[in-house]
Every structure is written in C-alpha cells, then in structure tokens.
Image (cartoon, rainbow over the protein chains, first blue to last red):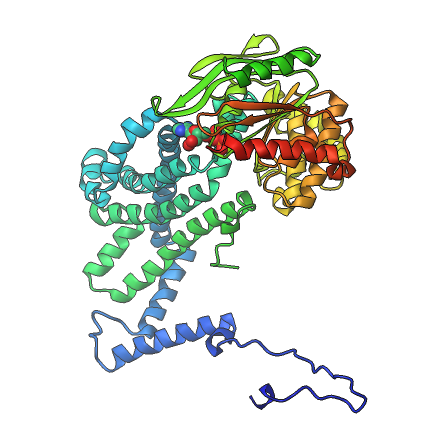
Length: 291
Length: 271
Ligand SMILES: Nc1ncnc2c1ncn2[C@@H]1O[C@H](COP(=O)(O)OP(=O)(O)O)[C@@H](O)[C@H]1O
Ligand SMILES: [Mg+2]
C-alpha cells in the first residue's frame, strides 16, 4: 500500500502526530464462512453430485438409488421405527448386543489393562499374548463365536466385546504408565496402599488416555455387533441390512445404515459426554468436534 | 574414613541437639555396579537444624534423598530415622520436588488434604479442612482453596505443595530442589517462607539445591558433594544469626560463605 513509505505527518509546531494503527488481520475467505452455512453447503454439494450421478445414468439405479427414493425410504423406515414395528424390535436387538458388548469390553478391558499396566507379571507374561491376538483380524473369529454360542444374541455380544476389549486394554495400560515418578514417590511417602495409589492417582492421571481407548472401543463395538449379525442371522438390524441388500433394495440399505449410525452416535457421544465431566482438567478434552 | 568425612563428623559433633537422621557408610550402585551414584556417605541431621547439599547434577543428590526417605534401598550402609532403621517408605517424612505435583482433578485444598485422606480416609480429610485453610492462609493463598491447580502460578503451586507436605506435621522435611523452577523473586520469597515455617515448627530439614546463595541463606550446615560417585568433600557451618533476612544477602559475611562454597565447587567437585 502507498501509506507504507509515507512519513508520519509533523505538525507546524513540531509535534509528531501518531496515526491509528488498528488494522484488520486477514482471514482467508473459506475460513470466514459461518459453520452452519459451511456444513449445509457441503451437504447440498454432496446431494447434487449424487443426483447428477443417478439422473445422467452414470451409475445404474440398481446400485445407487436417487436421493429422492432414498429420502422416501428414510421416512418409511422412520415411521416403522417410531410406530413400534418390526424394525424397532430389530433396532432394540442390535442396541442390546452393542450395549452388552460394551459393558463386557469395559469389564475385561479394565481388568486386563490394570493387570498389564500395574504388574510386571502382566506386562511380561500376559501382554505378549494380548498383542499377538490383537494383530489378528478379529472379525475372522466370528464363525467360531457362532459355533460356540449359537445364532442368538450371545454370539453378537461376544464378537462386539472381543473387538472392543483390546483398545481398552491398551489405553488403560498406557494410562497407568502416564503417572510420573514424583507422583508415585509422593504416594509412597504418604503410606498409600497399592489400591489407593491406583484409584486416587494412577487411574485419574490416565483418564485422557483411557478415554481415547473408550472412543475407539465405542466404534469397534458397533462394527462387531453388526458383523456378527451379517454372518450369523438373528433378528437385529444387521440382518435387515443383509436381507435388503440381497434383494437389491439399495434405498432400504441406505436408510437402515442411517438409523444405525444414530446408535453409534449416541454411544460415542455418551463417552464424550462422560469424558468432559471427568477429564475437565485436561486440555485434550476440548476435542474440537463440537466446540 | 576420608579426611573430609572426618571433618564432617567433627562439625556435627559440635552441634547440639538430638540426632534425628543418622546415615553411616551409605553407598548406592545402579546398573549392577556400573554406575556408582553414592560412595560411603556419613550424615547426621540433628533436631531443628537445616542442612543443604550442593553439588553438580548427576552426582547422586536425589538418590541420597530417596534412600533417606526409604524409597530405594542403599547398596551398602545404614539409615536410621528417629532411632528406627529405615527399610521402607516412612510416613513421618514430608517431601517436596522441583515440580509441585499437584493433581489437576483436585482443588487446591483437596490436594493439600490428600495425605490425610490417604492415611485416615475421606471423613478425616473433611474434618481437617479448617487446618488446611489455616495453612493456606499462612503461605498467602487465602481464597484459593477451591481453585484448581491449573489456575495457580508456579510459585503459588509450590506454596500449595508446602502446605500438603506440612498437613500431616512430619518431623523431617526432605526437599529436592523445590524452588529451582521458580523465578528469582518468587524464590527469595519462598526461602523466607520456608525459614519461617522451619523455625516455627522446629523442623529438621534437608535441602538439595543448585543455588549457593539459597543454601547459605537457609542452612546451618552446607555439604558440598563431588561428582559421581557422590561424596561429601566439604562441610561448611553457616554461622549467621536467625531469622535471616533479605538484607543479609548483601552482608560481607554472607558473601564470604558463598565464595567459599563456590571456590570449593570450582576446585574439584566437578572433576
Ligand atoms: N533408577 C536408576 N537407574 C540407573 N541409574 C540411575 C537411576 N537413578 C539415578 N541414576 C543415576 O545415578 C546418578 C545420580 O542420579 P541423581 O541422584 O538423580 O543425581 P542428582 O539428583 O544429583 O542430579 C546419575 O548418573 C543417574 O543417571
Ligand atoms: Mg536430582
């Protein structure tokens, strides 16, 4: 700008006049778009591309339904769900499998995590086995669980819990190692028992790590339950999806996935909510997803 | 016994008072003897005295403190506290570190009451709240009881850590560079606070520090430690009246003590 080289004006009586140097800091245009508008904009673009793909026949209707067909089916499935139809029953079945799987994963995850993180026995003798199992594709165990536990809900709970346990074990063990030496020494000079040190210091210190694991587990537990339902039938939402897909009823598949994602969202956000209550003191709690 | 150790024993014998801590021939090796951290340390701390140890980093000062507190075992030697051999962590010790180590999920007063909560349970901690508030008051933290530690400055956090150390009324204070993370102004203030507290309670204190003026200001005896393996190479009795004041920092006698220790450190403690 031209003002850069201009000298500061000096008054007749020799006094310098200092100009205001309040100026606007530059923000890129794309970052100035308000969040609601940005989010709706992305949705509109997404639907427009989708509409384009179907109406110009780039992708076959059998594979990809139009947005309108999908919307109609979403309403249809929603009506069934909210009027307590068979879909609600299936939804409830899957919810039960997911929640029970999560509870079992919490129990096993914390027990094993504390064993591995707190004892040298656990770290040296148990951890290698856990790492070995963790590297296997856990979904491949689904047929085993079906053979052992049958086609009822138990096999779904088992696979869901199996998948979700490992991230919790790892996170709890890592969390327990987060305590620093001075904190441990302090507790020893206070004469604290092992349990007091664990519950009053090590677990709280590890909560930021632990919640990272719980969020991964919350996603994994859904995947486990649905995979088991795909492979092992039953009366859950996974079975509805499988049937709809086998009938090439793609709008139905889309709308079922949409409602299923609500379950995943609810679980994930419950964990995030709890994290905010318990780990209010840690900077990472400002997770950025919903500031 | 080395000449220096004999001298140390002589100085201690001159001082009156009941021995609180007695260390005899304490050595510590790490890594199967490959690292010799401490070599035959003899030390007697008498009731109500303030002693400091000063020496290059890595010479085993923290190790010495951990052995005294019963947190690690010596490789050789004997540690006796209040007439009882130290073979594990002891509750009658108060400790402080360079970091305040306040727990961020507890308010300041909850942090201070933690030792009581651990020892006697939650109800006892609740009952002792008044005492904790009084302690906070004496270090100038009145009104910060229910504030979380993330909102405290470094100096304030260290003052809260002092309160936590004192809340169980320990007979001995072991201080591992407690103020070395603070700025100079906060540090002077903390030194005066610490002196007041120790005089008030007739506490027996042992301080590890890197600051020669700090050691001289606070101590009755300063031990100069050599680099690894750590040994006391000089024992200096500080004969300045108490309570010591900031004005004394510019006193020629104070300067002489500082110079003497500095010369000793230059001469060989770092070799
Ligand atoms: N747990 C340990 N294992 C092995 N070496 C250690 C251990 N703790 C301390 N050391 C070594 O012992 C020496 C003394 O350490 P430390 O007492 O912390 O020194 P200072 O506090 O004087 O700086 C250092 O060389 C350090 O590397
Ligand atoms: Mg140290």
